[in-house]
Length: 378
Ligand code: PLP
Image (cartoon, rainbow, N blue to C red; front, side, top):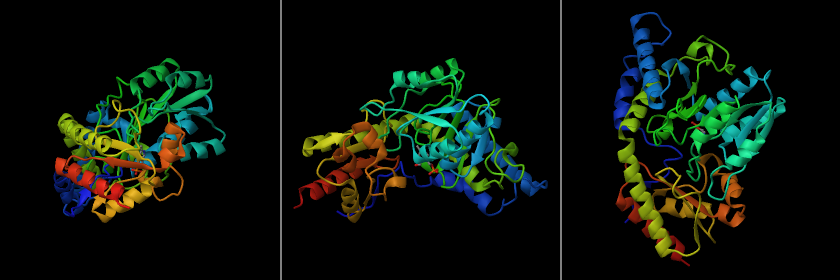
């Protein structure tokens, strides 16, 4: 019954064929530098601007509020460092959550060394941040709040519109890391009062190595990469035209099919969790069941190490994760799960399954079959 089943879409996704086809001409015939003034360069420039518009349309902003970067981590760095540095005359206090991705948490550590003070909002047992605590943490010198829209490990969705309202009311800039959310959730930066938003193409069936940052016009931020005049002087470097084209196409496909994909993912996820609860004892579902990404299911199999389960599944052709891909190689239990459960046994024994649009019910059956084999073997 050996098969290959990819169930780690929160780590990365395969490139959609339609996306690849859209990209190919820019890797072969249309190789012009988007800054060049002759026709070949202009073709590249047009393609970049079309993608910028596709991305802007997906989150309801203007295309001149989108800046291309190399990945989600760079977008997070540019947003936090750029905004903090340019607004330090207004205050030096930043609020974030305890379950952010390292791209935010490590950036905050660097900002601390640069004289900023950072407060971390805790999350409740369901993985949703404590809004009352967020309100309490706001100070006169708070200049920035950065809260992710959806968590990469447990998929929990934060009350972003409410946080946006609180930030606006207190005249604080609001950034959201939407790397896991974009393509999966309906995002409207105007309605949600989001001033800055990070995204990464490889999470929605486009290539790795391309990301984008939305920054609302009027918000001051310093560039972090010096050099040429690209991206309106905010991010130097020759544009990665083919990948930008892919990112634009991929977001368009994701937006068009969002409801259909989400319905499908929910069915797969629910079938999986139902079988696990029916078949196995000592299991614990991590994170809120309602407010979570459709494709995410994070379950702790108490008594087993997550890394062991991942290894055993891999032997059977299944790709899964025991935490985020970035920390999967580390010996420590997941920071996110520790912050949610405060229980090492739960944090150490978690298995993150993230379904994608090409998965089928047969994949779920195969996963359950393999888990049964692993968990019942002596
Ligand atoms: N933020 C979140 C929530 C993520 O899940 C990730 C990647 O997994 C990143 C940021 C970093 O994105 P990238 O891998 O494109 O640097």
